[in-house]
Image (cartoon, rainbow, N blue to C red):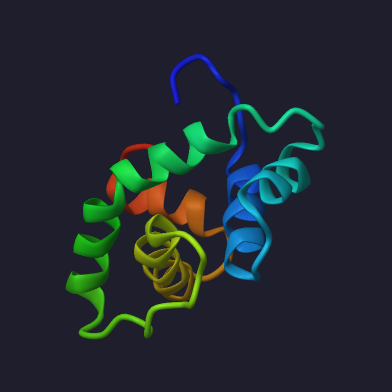
Length: 107
């Protein structure tokens, strides 16, 4: 994400809010406690850019993905089931666990 600072906890809150049905803007606001959601789509684009990497880790660890969640956005239909499976696999503090296992940033 370049010069923008965020914690893995903020990222976890953002993704968890999306998985539970929050809008992209609401999820970003919940994670960052800011009223300006201008970076929300940048976060989503960064997550989408890592989708293959997330799926590769899942493929190595488990044979199946969760059935696709019904969402308004096709991008979220691709991304959220993968992240939900990845987070279930990694357990507590999944963003930090991913970084530890993969030796590079989650997003």
